[in-house]
Image (cartoon, rainbow, N blue to C red; front, side, top):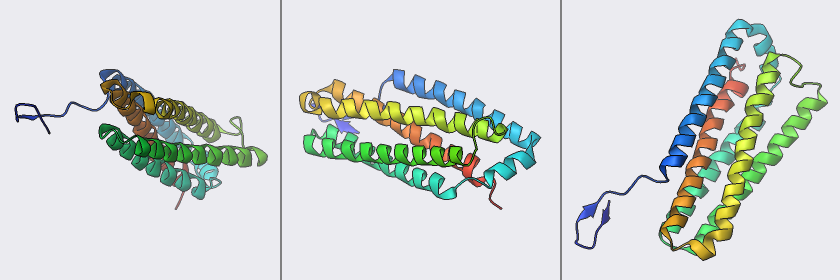
Length: 196
């Protein structure tokens, strides 16, 4: 709750804009359908999926989960700093968020290279087709989010006092949190389901 000039309590508006909420909702439905198809294929081919998942490196999945959760914390701090018009902190938190995104990206490239070196490609079996498709789509979301974060960081000095900048950063934050949330579903589907 915030306080108006007359001293009355005024409820805070929702973070972000209707456009980003609509985009996230539609994207969530698309990924949900992909996850349902993945699970139905896992039921249809349990031996194939179990054997493939045993070859997944748990440390890659867990490391990326921790990196993205940490990046979400930095994004929250950046939004709070923008509301207080604290330019230095906004820049610092967005830089930290970008660093986490970069760690995720490097980790993913290393993991993909390791899998391809083992001869595990999208053509290997249905599990690896899903693995590359799901994690690849998520990876593109991470890269897209990083582009938005770079833009917000570059525009901070010029726009930090304006309502439009706060909304822009909130939209970026909502998208980034969605990307992080997606990984929290992908991680157990890909990396944990095969662990006994």
